[in-house]
Length: 269
Ligand SMILES: Nc1ncnc2c1ncn2[C@@H]1O[C@H](COP(=O)(O)OP(=O)(O)OP(=O)(O)O)[C@@H](O)[C@H]1O
Ligand SMILES: [Mg+2]
Image 1 (spheres, rainbow, N blue to C red):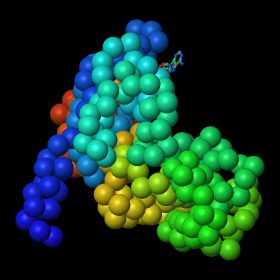
Image 2 (tube, helix red, strand yellow; image 1 turned 135 degrees about the horizontal axis):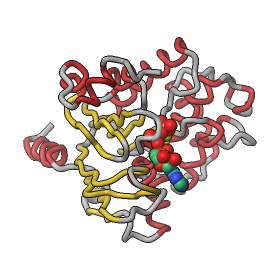
Image 3 (tube, rainbow, N blue to C red; image 1 turned 30 degrees about the vertical axis):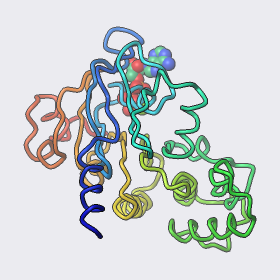
Image 4 (cartoon, protein in one colour; image 1 turned 90 degrees about the vertical axis):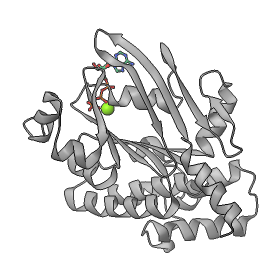
C-alpha cells in the first residue's frame, strides 16, 4: 500500500460512517426511544441491549430509514464521501441505500427472504437491482455466497422454505452481503434458533464482519451475543440509553444500576 493510500485509509476510518443526534420517537410516555446520539465508525459493531419493550426495535427502525423520527437526525457518509441526511433524502434515495450500501437482517427469515423463489434468486436480487444481468455471473455469485454461509451450493435451486431455520438465516445474510454493503442492521438475528445453531451462526457472522470490515448495528437481548459480536454497547431502558461504552467495560464493570441488574442476569430470560 502506498503512503497516499494509507493516508486515505486513515482519513476514511477516522471519520464516522454514520452519525445520529437526539433521535426520538415516542408512542407514549417512555414508549419508543428518545434523545439517542452516537457515531459509528467503519468496521465497528454496535450492540443495542435492554429488556423487552425498552425501545430497541423502535430505535433500529429509525436508524435504518424505516420509520421517521419525531425529532433528531440520522446521517450517513456514502461511498462517494458525501453525508446524506436520511430523513431529508427522498424515499427513492433511502430505498436505494437500503438495497445497496446497507443491509437489514430480520429476526424472522420469512420477513427477510422471498420464500417463493429459489435460494439463488434470493441472493441474486440485489445484484440485479444494481444492474447485473449476466446469468452466469448471478449464478456464480449465488454459488459463491452459499459456500460463504456454509450452505451446500447444490441447494441453489431449492426454495428457502425447504431449509432449516438456521439455513434460512444464513441465506438471509448472504442475500444482504452479496452487494458489498458497508452497514448492516440486525434485529435479534439469532432469536428464534436453537442454542447450538445460534452458536454456529454467530461464529459465521463474526467471521464475515471482520473479513468484510462491516459496520453493524445489532439489537439483541442476549448479552452473550453482545459479548461475542459487539465492540461497543448501548443499554436501553424505558426509551432512554442509560449507559454506553465499550462492550467489555459495560459487561465487566457496569456503572448504571440497570446495567448492573442486566449483567447480573436477574433480568435475563
Ligand atoms: N408502532 C407502534 N405503535 C404503538 N406503540 C409501539 C409501536 N412500536 C413500538 N411501540 C411501543 O414502544 C415500546 C418499545 O417497543 P420496541 O418494540 O421498540 O421494544 P423492544 O426493546 O424492541 O422490545 P422486544 O425486546 O420485546 O423486541 C413498547 O412499549 C411498544 O409497545
Ligand atoms: Mg424488538
